[in-house]
Structure formats: C-alpha cells, structure tokens
Length: 78
Image (cartoon, rainbow, N blue to C red; front, side):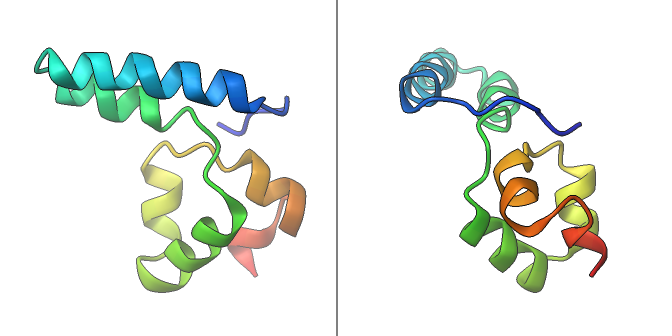
C-alpha cells in the first residue's frame, strides 16, 4: 500500500538501523519486511519495473510512494 507522507532521511536511517539489528539477530524476514517500508528511490523503481516486472513490485510489498510522486500514481500501468 502506498505511503502518503514523505519520509525524512533520518527516518530512513532509523528504519535501516533497526532492520540491520534484526538481520544480525537472525531475523531475515523481519529485516526484509522493515526494509520494504523505506520508499524505493524512483530511479530504482523504474529499473526494477523494466528488469523484473510490475508484478514483482506490486506483490513484493515495496513502498513505491516516491516513484508515484515522481511518475504519477498510474506509472506501473504505463
């Protein structure tokens, strides 16, 4: 589900640090789940759409809010 607020760099770093702690403790699923809450950069989302496909982005639970802000809410269907 798309996020509506812009996430600050400090918030992204905090989530990343918490995710790394989970990974170090052996919780790979928790790490993956938490990392996917950080908005994927638009350039990376565009590459992933081209290389891996729309279904991967939609079904993967990625936060695509920054890509939607840059490319429009219907960018995955174009």
